[in-house]
Image (cartoon, rainbow, N blue to C red):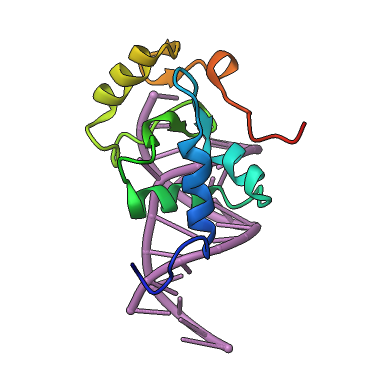
Amino acid sequence: MSKTGFGESLNEKVYQIVKKIPRGKVSTYGEIAISLGKPRAARQVGWALHANRSVDVPCHRVVDRNGRLAPNFAFDGAKEQRRRLESEGVKFADEMHVDLSKSIWKGNSKS
DNA sequence: AAAGTGACGCATT
DNA sequence: TAATGCGCCACTT
């Protein structure tokens, strides 16, 4: 493994959280960042996903604060991602925006 | 340690 | 919707 090992960077925490996003739900970079305890580290979350983009991490369930995906850096393209989310039961407000109000996942919040 | 970089967030145009 | 500018934070070199 890399010299960083595991669980040492904030990055690793991001993967853990994204991995627990249930099917049919999505999360935002901001929400994840908040869960990490760093509400302003949203960029880091996105950066983490891009740095890894592993199959273990359902990055397609992570959208921006607007409910929009990452068209440029998405694994297959925005249209493929949209299709994928719809397959999981995620509703779309329009072709580029997920209906966050219905599909946002906040399971990482403290009870 | 300093600078560079980025799959963001938000305001404004 | 898209583009631009500014701020924020953490990783890489």
